[in-house]
Length: 219
Ligand SMILES: Cc1cc2nc3c(=O)[nH]c(=O)nc-3n(C[C@H](O)[C@H](O)[C@H](O)COP(=O)(O)O)c2cc1C
Image (cartoon, rainbow, N blue to C red; front, side, top):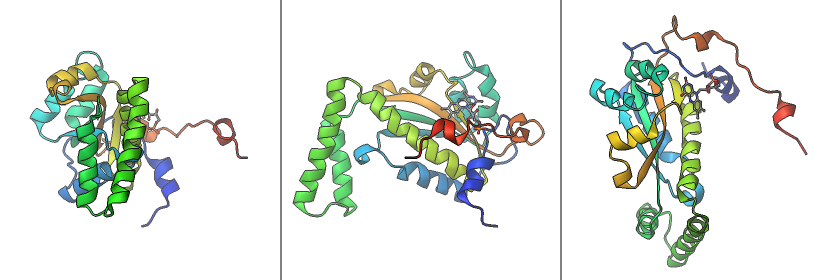
């Protein structure tokens, strides 16, 4: 049965317990990869990297980010089907800007030389604003959080439950996966899988959100 987007927005929830026997199919994981790859970002910089753990060993490594400081999140990491570590770029180099441009040319998004130069100038201008403000990493993190939002809603449309986790020691994840050496910073983890209906207390609770008029002004 087809559902409206409002159905998914209001019926998705943060899973608090997973059925460890259920794995996401390869076909659905392809949809998840498509979501992660196609999220929007400022000047199409795509300043992110994802570590996707599906093996017990991989998930153990991700749980190193929670076991000590945020143990309440550890069980979900071990029981879920896939745990995704979201990392953002700590710096945006001129080489990286060129790499994105070269891909746009290869994908035939940019054909005319003039369009190529215009895109390069605009991307460099926005990046320079953040280089000068000293907040390139924060800017990259904002873009990466957009991707997180798209994933949460997208997963719900696939019937996949998810848990976004800021309760992770990002420094521990940086160490475990040698992220700093690669110019990356861990930000947040999202576990994906299927809720353990008996133990997932959040699945049974009604949603609670501030009233529309509290959070928006229609002009
Ligand atoms: C960025 C972010 C970080 C979060 N961190 C955690 C976390 O570490 N552990 C957890 O169980 N839930 C975490 N949550 C879930 C929120 O508590 C949850 O989204 C919120 O209470 C709304 O509930 P809902 O997702 O079920 O609609 C996080 C959510 C977001 C968006």
